[in-house]
Image (cartoon, rainbow, N blue to C red; front, side, top):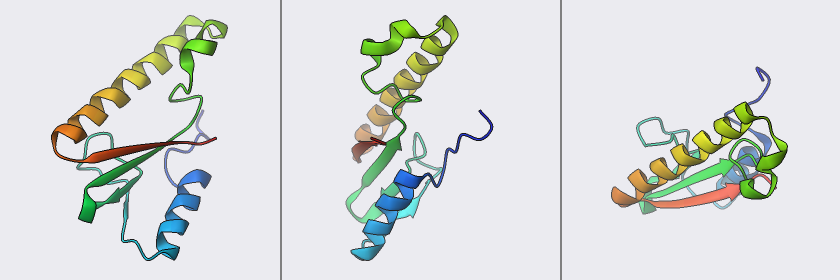
Length: 102
């Protein structure tokens, strides 16, 4: 698990390169916002999260039964934390965009 990247992943680089190509000013991994969004466009208060399918549980109820209890709990906890962070951002007036790696 030490090789799993949490920042500057390939999907993040692709999205950020596209924003740069279109001359859209954005910041990466802003730590003073809940959940530390992968990309932030402050001018329009947009927080973008680019989530891995496994770690953040894309369609989790369909495949959770295949995992051991520990993994099920880990991913379920991550999903709850994601929702809590999205709610906090929305309450602060931010728009939250979630992109999946696939």
